[in-house]
Length: 332
Image (cartoon, rainbow, N blue to C red; front, side):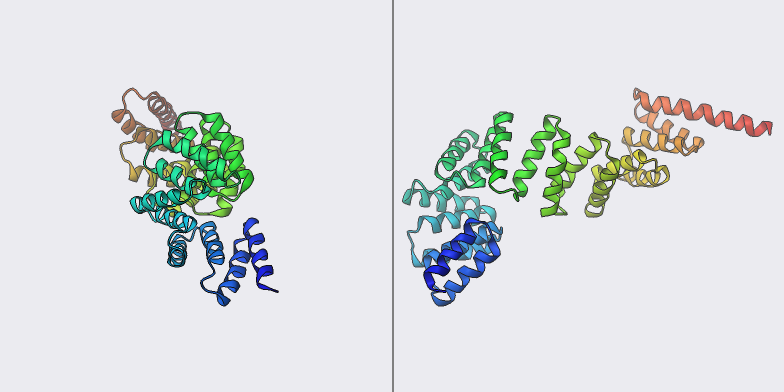
């Protein structure tokens, strides 16, 4: 295959977001010509797509060594610096890119992202609109636009922007999470579930996605699914209150009260003065017919929250059944 055919194939893979094949093909070009700026730009796009930002920075530096005034090289450098949390340096590099080429879509994507990080929401909205004008098929432009709109509480427009972003590239963890958060906010929980599953397929241990899924499954009372995600979160964050509470609630929802009781012991050990947790413990002991223990825990909850009605009710029920059992035992 000739050099130009190889280049054409590399760009075809790049357009299709087939990062491994694009990388392999661009590397073949670079083996023959290490200073091929087009192939280096292709590799920059690949490393960006793979979220390998250290490598992206190195590739951008290689481009700029060959072409110091490469607007694209500066824009890729800015993106790498932004993702490496070197915000000031990223801003400088991106401003230089825009001075060289005011119509560079990537630079406008970068600018909107940097402005969002800095809390400059009106400017970020304008920059995201410009990014969409210059790069309408870049999913990040639409995602940044969605975030900017959300900061102005333009929820329906924000949701539409994330839909457009995901229509271009359905494998975006950030866009899946943001769309899920919006749907949770407006109570469309069933639509959150496929987003969570897609996001977990991309990153099975992502804390934000697990938390989002827990919120949806708990609201929908899907306890098997809630148990699976909350248990996974417990393993990742052993001292996390949200994880233990929802794990305990899922076990209760499945009628597994002995297991729930053990989970509640972990939860209460993390927060000994939470009246809600103590009430759940008392209610669980009540369902296990351990009335004396239920009374003791409910009494503790009542002392901490005298006006908390659920604790008072479970105390009264447990106390009544404890005495009934005592009377029955004495008769026998």
